[in-house]
Length: 357
Ligand code: SF4
Ligand code: SF4
Image (cartoon, rainbow, N blue to C red; front, top):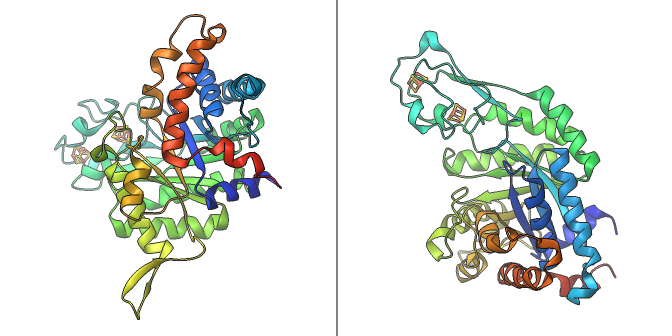
């Protein structure tokens, strides 16, 4: 079975749990430890910063976990897929904002919404600080904020990441301007033409209609390689309650209703199609209750991505000195991580034992 087919199988059976190490997380040791622990726990995806050194740390973490199988009495029959994320806070590889000062009315609305303080009072965007998040253009009343691409940067860095061991690329594409995103999407697809590609979308700047239209365009380019990461409220997953995860379920539901369900005219009920048109990973505020809430509401998904919450629950164990030699500490962290994976997608290592037959 090819890696592409294995990935499809994980998605078809809703077994794909992805640990998000964080696009801005370039702490090599932390990425290695997180990758090791969550590989042991059953995660089948690791999402890391688009930096070959970070990808390499993730590969090392996965290798370490595989070398520890016997100690943990588990079988990791499917090696996790490594995704590199571009275009989200912490990442500097994609688009940069530029204010057309000649038409700007100097209302200063864009300054406080910038998460990285990239817009000073003279309104000349500080390039090195801009992460292309789209907050400024979303509030600008006269549409004078434009973007330019870091295309060269992408064309150089992404192949290096693939060479280092990444297999998938994810583009964070929730800004409202379509043309910039679709250009970046074409680049991502051309760099990795035979593997799954993921587009991460939320509804902060996109209406339901704009979300739908962007997914359609993405599908036209990627076909069955497309995964949509449905972000609820990005990077909000610190708490373990239903409210925190509510929007992740909601975004997933909106996409399902448009692409994965159809109305039965006789019964007047909307049912899921037999074959998914769009594979969805829930994310953004995901925690140990995400699957629980999705199931209560009959919201289907093909996988779950967890970042903030997954990292937070094992933080104290990761930070301990002499981490690799303290097996009791590793086991404690493993059990916590494993429970989070089980809560969301079940005992994946157990299921995938017979997976490749
Ligand atoms: S795109 Fe985001 S990071 Fe860049 S200037 Fe605008 S608000 Fe700031
Ligand atoms: S929001 Fe638009 S018009 Fe207002 S200061 Fe910023 S760029 Fe100028």
